[in-house]
Length: 500
Image (cartoon, rainbow, N blue to C red; front, top):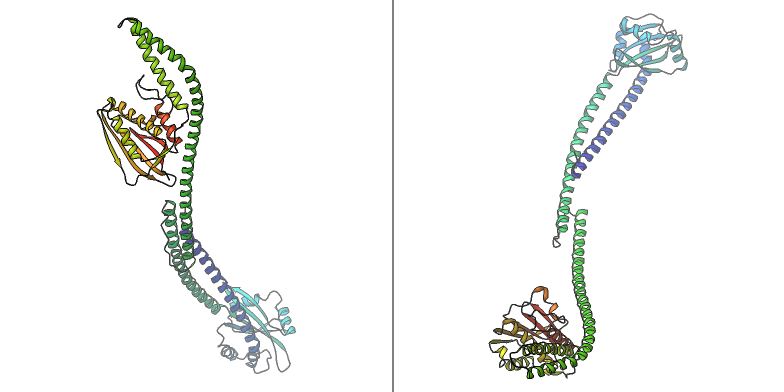
């Protein structure tokens, strides 16, 4: 099972504390037991040395091998204050036992522990005048065996006194120490666990706050801020995190502004590229149109003249009259196309003048209202405040306005309403007058909004137009420093710069 990191911290800390407490307890017990055993040996060895003479005095100061009946009681009274002492044995230099406070069975066992030649051991102790101590284990009990030399004061006959001490009191003391150490270890472990839980929770809460805040920031909430008042590194980390979020928000705002600028630049670049391509195409088309129109104008004029002569000489209603009529109609259509091509290819030669756009539009509408295609057309004018005056060739502006009006009349079937709106249009790049033409006709489809300005493209029925009118309008407006566009449906917009 995969543990979360808070649980891992708790588990690792508890394990480390348990190991440290256990190791400390073992070292403490081992060290104390060792020191106590050293003290036990030193204390009882010293007791053996200083008590040996007193034991000898119990026999009257001159030990001749006889046993005083009260010796045992005197020796017992002498050693009663040492609770570790189990018994005393008096040995000659040959290792023979002269006196013993042990019973026969225990005495035999103790005699066997001296080996096959006890005299050699006793002689060695007496000759060096240093006590000999050793640990014994009899019937599962640990014993300390001390052999101390002593000399009689009379004939200086050497003897040795053997003391046997039990480790019982030391074992009890060690057991009590183990209990106290275990109890202390349990208490320390419990306190360590509680401290680990406290520290783990104290660490988990700030980290959870940081984690939740990071998630909110990742989801896009750049206004979120971390609130931690712990007074430690976590609070410092929260402040740094908030600074990072502020920096990210600023960088994001800068990137968004940069993206907007790049998008605008790309749009302008595409528009410029489109204008360049259109200009190149129109320039080539203009050169071709001028040459073709010039070459075709004279032959078409000749055909038109002969067709009129034929109609004058034939009988009305005859087949030849009908053929001549068709020739006249189609020849006139060719003349219109040639005239349009010449207008498209011919550079503007007019003089620019400062005009009031509202007056120019009303004068144009007043002249068109009397003509047959506009007799059932209603005009609606809406002029905003502070519309600036414009500078343009009056004939060019009239040609553009008349072309748009004729297109609207044909689209509505010579009946409907034309609305002309004028307003001041200001932006970072443009400052001028915006004219918006709209009618109640079916309008232009979305797929043809830009193509309507291409030469020879038309949405009218065959024979009703050449497809050059809007191209010529765009050419005239752009030569005046403005732009024209199809804004959707039956709405066309023209912008011209203000006159200064």
